[in-house]
Image 1 (cartoon, rainbow, N blue to C red):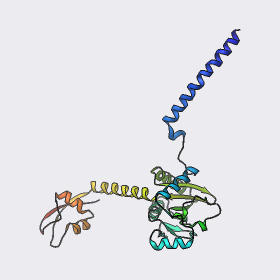
Image 2 (image 1 turned 135 degrees about the vertical axis):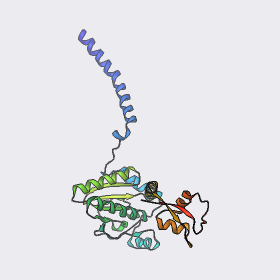
Image 3 (image 1 turned 135 degrees about the horizontal axis):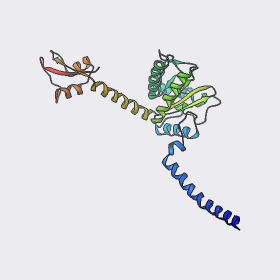
Image 4 (image 1 turned 30 degrees about the horizontal axis):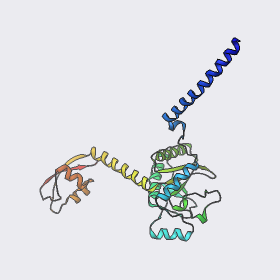
Length: 265
């Protein structure tokens, strides 16, 4: 009887413990959603495709269907040319055009990539009309909108590591979606134009503030024909900074006047 009673008590204890365990697990999921729900990777997913398509729709982008449509969008200025330079190469790109913000992203990334890795960044695909999509492309691909770019996968582990860290960081900022593809090996990146443009603007503004915060302040004697604009341009500063440094309400200055001029280091 003792053994039977013990078994019954143990079973009852387990039945009470299961709901408690469920509550504890639910609490852990709520407290730590990022570590248990969706880790950030470059593997790609249906959710990633959904985000890309939603961004294309939010920007009211057209999914171009033919080369003729691509040509019309280039002529209208909606798509801009992407050309090779000392940091960037293009390989077998049928339509070397992209949305302006996507081109900005490519040029900035290529410059940083070459500086970090010592090799050029290689673009393998840009705008692709739906009639020119490869057999393995997703039916929801945003390449036909001009907001996507594919990069060749480097043979250098260090370069691959740098690029993947950078793409993941930018994805974490909510300005793009990046996927590491295997057939053929490359990186697919969908740039979100408006979020990316805001990101670059904020970054540039912070960098400018940092430079001016560490700027030297020099005295300058105004010469005949000078204006705040010409003085600012000659010293690498802005009219607003000149006004602020000299407590000027307007733009009027006179020959012989001494101005404090901040010169960015």
